[in-house]
Amino acid sequence: MKKITGLICVCLLIAGIVLTVSCQKQESGSGTQTGRTAAPEKLILWVYDSGRIEVLTQLGRQFEAEFGVAVEVSMVDLSQIRTQFLLAAGGADCADLAIIPHDNIGPLVENGVIMEINLGNKRSSYLQPALDGFNYNGRLFGVPLAVENVGFFYNKDLVPTPPATWDEAVAVTERLKSAGRVDYMMGLPDATYNVYAIYDAFGGAIFGKNADGSLNGKNVLLAESGFVAGLQFLTNMVNRGLIPQTIDWDGAHVLFESGRAPFCPTGPWAVNRIVESGVNYGIASFPAARAGGPAGNPFLGVQGIIVNNNSPRRLLAQSFAADFIAREESMMAIFRAEQRPSAWRSIFETAGDANTLAFNAAGVNAIPMPSIPEMGYVWDAWVAAADLAFAGERSPQDALRNARLQIEALSN
Image 1 (tube, helix red, strand yellow):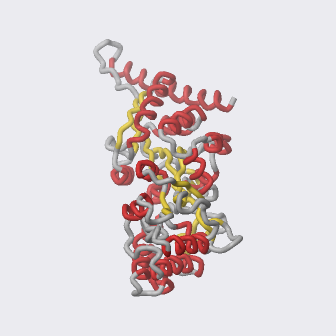
Image 2: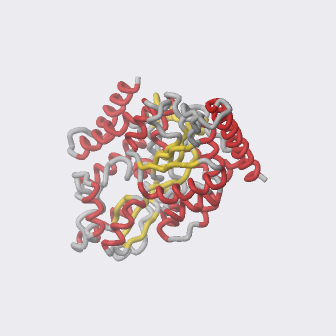
Image 3: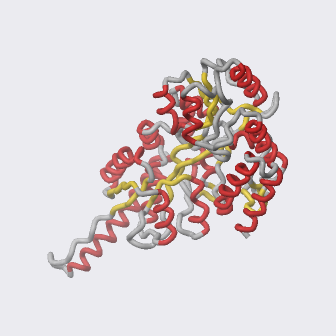
């Protein structure tokens, strides 16, 4: 009944559009056959990667067959999507809909250029963290499609059972290193996103929260004890020669793929290259900071559809996203085309391939990456703090205190 009701609403909306176009045709024709025919209604959807273009084009054709409205799908660079929505949302140079990562919505919401989404009873069909990702100040501004998070890759030939704590990871690495079998515990693809689970395991967080649970961008927690402890751990590992001082995304993967490091923190995007390397790998949850403590939680990324609030077709666009795409058959088609973990609960919970199951387990309590505008000032300050600490130029405490002051100065 819910599905039927939603589709009836789509049909009524499109019927209204058709009636309007029909009237325009009659008026322009002045009762004769000489009037210009009005252009057919069409939605434009932008995507920032190629993995979903084919399936979304197929779904667009299905939408057109059912409701008579075409959907044109184009690949557009993510930075251009952000720029066009901010600067040209009301004009012909902007799409009606776009797929973006959730952490990009802050400025778009603040500038009023994307619509609030009402999923009604369909909310219960989605993973709560996926909804949280597109939640901004208690309101939903996107239809979630997929979720993704980093996992803790381990070499099964070197470490048959993944470590439960970082102390165990250090101990096994030191034994392997003493035997000449490895050079490092792991390389760092970065000291921020890919290893956020370490900061979390030690009790760190980036922002405090308001009474309603939303993030408070004015309450920066980088210099608090938990976050400092996370950077102190990484710095200790650098000083002990268990992590290279140089941060190198490709180098961290090569260390793991060549068997010279037993661990690598990375995500679904690296699976193909790791498989091709031939290393016997597993994917686990991140170790806890101490025995009996909780596993470290990585960042959660959510991709979803946003609707241009200034589009003359915004209601039709919202119906395409919140009624047509937000149903199990459409979400299943998207998942089958590109097997990122689905934001649709039943599809997520029944995923059968080993890698997807492992990433799901590693990210079961993943933390949505902050989408508030202040997060834009965090990355550079955080990177600089880690660089200073690893080089021995500042203590982790001082480096993160300076980072916090920098973020506060830029965001005030």
